[in-house]
Amino acid sequence: MATLQDPKELACGLTLPNRFAKAAMAEKMDDGSNVPSDAIIRVYKEWAKGGWGLIITGNVHVDPAYLNTNGDLSVESARLSDPTYIKGWQKWADACATPTVLQINHPGRQSPRSAGTRGAFVQAVAPSAIPLDFGPGLLQRLLRTVAFGSPRELTTEEVEGVIEKFVQAAKLAYDSGFNGVEVHGAHGYLLAQFMSSRTNTRTDQYGGSASKRAEPVVQILSRIRAATSPSFCIGLKLNSADVSHSGDTIEDFIEQLQLFVDCGIDFLEISGGTYENPTMSDGVANNNATTKSSSTVQREAFFLSFASIIRERFPSLPLIVTGGFRTRGAMGDAIESGQCDVIGIGRPAALAPNAPTEMLNTKDLTLKLQAPSIEMGWLKKYLRVRALGASTENNWYAAQIRKLGLL
Image (cartoon, rainbow, N blue to C red; front, side, top):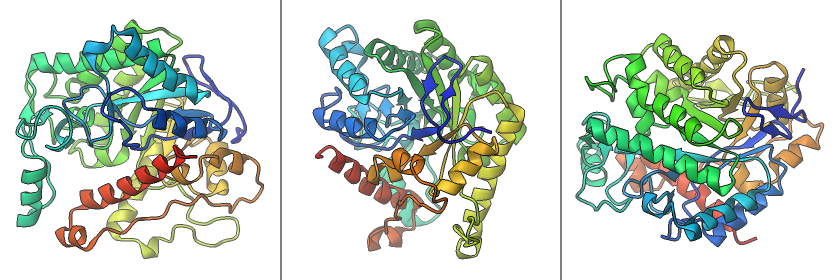
């Protein structure tokens, strides 16, 4: 049986020295130049010393007009022939000093008015003109209107342009010396919006069936491979919550995933609820379901079944699972049982950049990584919008990452 110490070779030939992946987190450290700053390079040097088998960077957006938040890095297509621009990205790749893939993304309708170069009164874009849903209340609807507005539907030609921007971002990663890219198809971002019948009601070649809704991702994956090389790693990130709220069946998702596998993806990262065992070796409940809301329990149960279905249907697909891993025992169990190939660690990496070294050097199965939940302020609690709670935590963890850049 595999252990956490064992190396893992991906289909592209990239060998990970162990089974730990530093999962993507929002660093929010762009200085406005859209070139990796000295601060973010220092952060990745810290992670490079931590013993990670794989590093997945935070979001790099493919279009500076549409960001998820200010401070996110973006690729500027007009500068891709500028050697000075590429050299800045090469400096980041060199600093990682361990297998590293660049996560590339487009937020779609989740781009706030204040984020990006498009201007506050220019609409975000989406597969269909369906706004975000924060809830039925007046305050929730007002917040959506003020912060996001309603997106406009991309034309067929514009979809082609978005696909090309993903390819250009991947080519920049390839030319800069990164080992690969991870195409972000999760967390409700643009590609997840395309894949879901709830947010994609198009009737052209990019909508109308599960396979057509997956077509933008299929083209992105295929064109990236054509623009790079067989040894360049191409991964895909999906989220169980996106699937459970998509309005589609698990069979629709499997149909889409089969198309992505046929494109030759080298790994799949899935994220969701939690992957911790309910009890550890000492019999103490680690994630006691009685203390959680029923919706949380249902979400986590779906995440576990979601991961199991993927492993059963696609047993040879290298699988990274990210979501709630905290103890050494649960991580080892997931690998040794064959449920996944690599353990993804997100928020704890902001507090413990050397987490893999700690976990690999201990025999204490109860050793636990820390990742505190951050309370919302009173106003955000009053508004009762879950996205605000997520932004509170994301901002706090981004601040911890920035502290790493000061070490």
